Amino acid sequence: MDSKFMGLVQRLQVPDRPKKCGSYSGPRVAVIYGFMARRLMQRNLLHYLRSRGLSDVTLYGHMHSVDSISDDLQASRSEGRSIVILGYSQGGFQAVKVARQLERRGVDVALLVSIAAGGLGRVFPGRWGFEPRNVPTNVDVCLNFFSQGDLLGCDRNHQMNEAVGSRASQRIENHMFHAHEGVSHLDLVRCYPEDGINPAVRTQVIERIMAEISGLKRSDAQESAQADRPVFGRPSA
Image 1 (tube, rainbow, N blue to C red):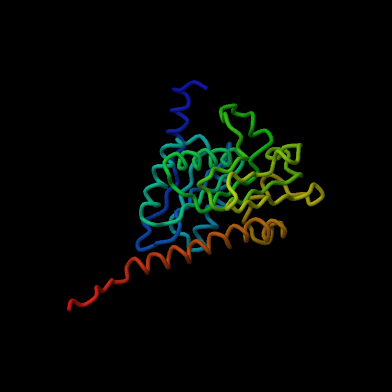
Image 2: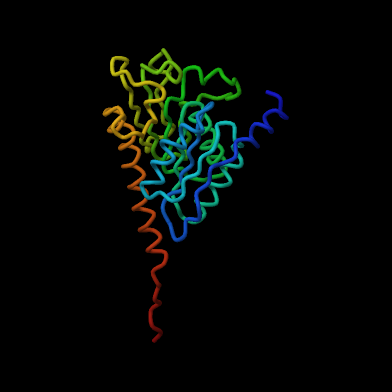
């Protein structure tokens, strides 16, 4: 793809950044949306995460600079905060690319979430150049969601949808919805109206993601409290 065109597209994908976080010490979350899915994510997952007390969630586009996203996340990791990368559709491919970039920098990723990142996303645009199911070594936990009823983000070959770990200590979870459950590409990230959420998606996707992030939030808060605790030296003789 022409570099000038790519540069223009990246400039148009201005991140949706949170307001000042104050004393918030929880995880830094990057949400990366797919092709034409900015408003969908703003109205659903982005709004949902922020409404649940996650004050530092930024929305990026799937063609936003990998280096730029990595710079943002690395700055937070240097503060002792956990990193979460969540990608939807083609944003799922980009999420793995960001994790790979952070791996090269020696930066850990506490949680990588991939949602409906397959199917047509593999060929449009054809610029990925790697296998997006291979989870980088710096990722501690990977949650991968896909639906056989998704005509856009699911590979027909079942095994091509499954994330694969690169070290024994990683926790990799592949969550599949069968075709008869009728979970579409949009259903996988729809959070509103709440009475319109597919019950299986609510339990297996939304609540599963929140449970993992909530655990990181508690862990980060404990680390912050310990770091702020005064250290008293042994009295001299």
